[in-house]
Image 1 (cartoon, rainbow, N blue to C red):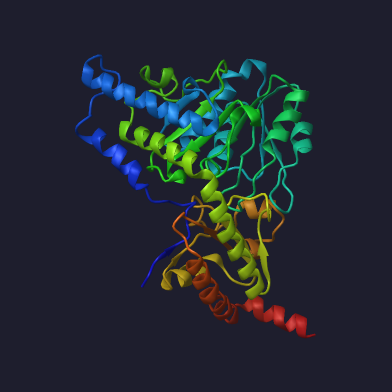
Image 2: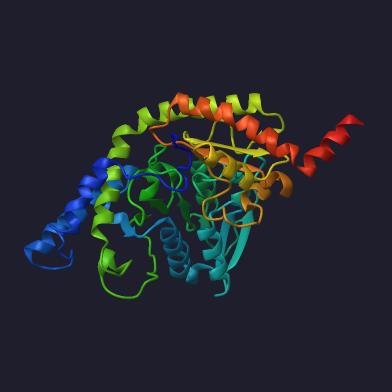
Length: 395
């Protein structure tokens, strides 16, 4: 059976060129980047090049990049490191209701240390209102964290306008964005966005798992969350994971070179999927924005069916997809993103997410459109909710 992989938000394969770039740093070039001898300095030069490559992906300077282990670590370092460093100015943080759990839970951890948090709601398309963010600011606000794009429903936020309104009202407030779902898929320029910090992860741009980076604008103070040595400008102690860093840098370089072509190709496939699925299956809601969404992302709420049943049925047909975010897909609770958008628990539990790799084809999408409607129809026939719905409509 051919396998069709439509779960990029959970994991993506490492690009062959990325793997080739990484391999020498497991054996031939194994030196410690902090060593003064030539073996160490050769590795240090490679890490410096990867830092420049990663910085170019988001329009930053290399000295503004801190390498970390993943997007969740980047978010934790940003939230905790920025908030604690800015605490003398205030102890209030503003977030949106649909942030990744690594942001929301980092904020909860800070609340235990005396910080206060305001959660800004979103509309039915998971869009954050810039005016609502500005209105949530207080005299003691130290940090605002609003994601650039949502991994579960694909909506791209009006981040530049959010930053403009925040800075106009409170120039000293720091702005962080979780760009893990967006980096490498849409153009990003930290200067144009107006943010002070940005998180990204290598596995979302065909780089290795266990790689990530945090951009912090030059001059902004961030307190380290790992005590130890002097690595990463003393912001992130610990021996550098050199192969992962090299892989992230090469993945960033490839993403820059191929961005426009990939966006056009994946957007066309995404729209083919959205239009085909909503036309062939009744009682299906596209979740997230229709146009201002990630080019590789299509997500839906399929009424009267549970997400887990759809995933298992699709897997039997050779199709890998997701239901909700990768970090909560094993949870029995409804997605906080779906609930924040105003969906009821029943509809939220019917979420299905298709996220496309670059090697996806029109034939793959057409196969999905052929096999998915019968799956939904079969599952609905076993659903008491659907039976009750049919009785109600027949009256």
